[in-house]
Length: 436
Image 1 (cartoon, one colour):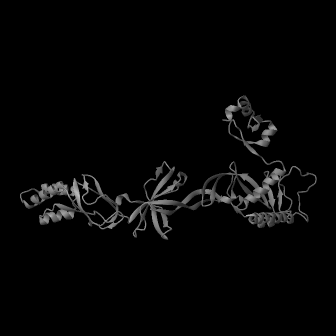
Image 2 (cartoon, one colour; image 1 turned 30 degrees about the vertical axis):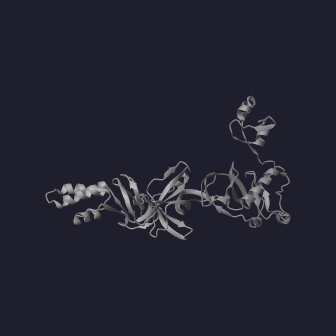
Image 3 (cartoon, helix red, strand yellow; image 1 turned 180 degrees about the vertical axis):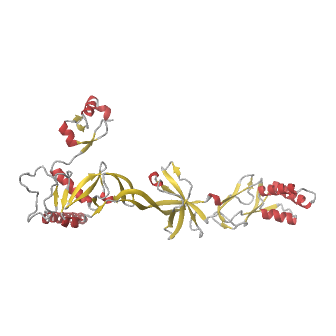
């Protein structure tokens, strides 16, 4: 452990020495805007020894904190610049989705009357069954009586076809398939034990029967689902949901299988999930190889088009919590700090909704190093502002300005700063009311 700490300390010392040497060897690298300490009559602008290769520039009109960085130093610290443009931007939402069954492909087998299971065929939960495949045999007094009546009606030429039709519907309601009814009418053979068959092809999601199991009318016996087409639900934030449109194509991947499938956003409106505070977007996907099963998690890549806006790489914006700052490239190595407003954030890019105009050139990378130089120069000039909160109206307050204006009060050993004389007066009347 001691060796490790010693190595880290050495690395820090070496890095510090290199940076200090680089600054010493390139003294013309960083020169800031107006400094109060400079003499107006001297005509000097902290020019490097041997002359100022950047030329004499009037920086009096630039904002405090403006820094000048030579081309050599820009190359050393990796500064790059670009022109702000207003354009539409294609982005990709990367979401986590969960597989669900297509509700239109679920077959539920319910008991049409009271009965008892005689025999159960192979076909447990998770098994694949074909349409018409035997699931179980059972005896039902109601169904047996209806079969006898149908045989009697179909063999009597004087019975009306309406009575026969009504009885067929009753048999279907009790659980017989159309093919079983057709066979019964043809052979006129009534069997006390009826075979329960799968109404469609798919996977058995639920099997609730066993030999000698007694069931009642309306009770669910089997639930079968066709998984050749499934739904996928993906959570998106409300701010992202406004960019989604029906029928947009998406890519669904299942990393464990190394497979990708094409999905489509449904035209059904997203549902709001009160627990996660997100919108659940439904996608429909063909699943011919049955790779996707209910409750699986998958990765979803959903392309969207963001509206016309000025966008910058996220690294170009310095976010201190109170302010968002970019550095405007004023030419000849000058970088001026400017506060901006931001909007959406996607794919490591951010929307600039205020404070920047199209055509302005800004620093795109190494802005944190430029910001460090800017703050050092402001601090050296006594211009770096420390911010505080007005306890009365919760406004941001410059500590330096509040001190100069006398807008400060002390309470229980702590100093508080105010945005106006009215706020200070209210605070002094009852500090406890504002410090709960």
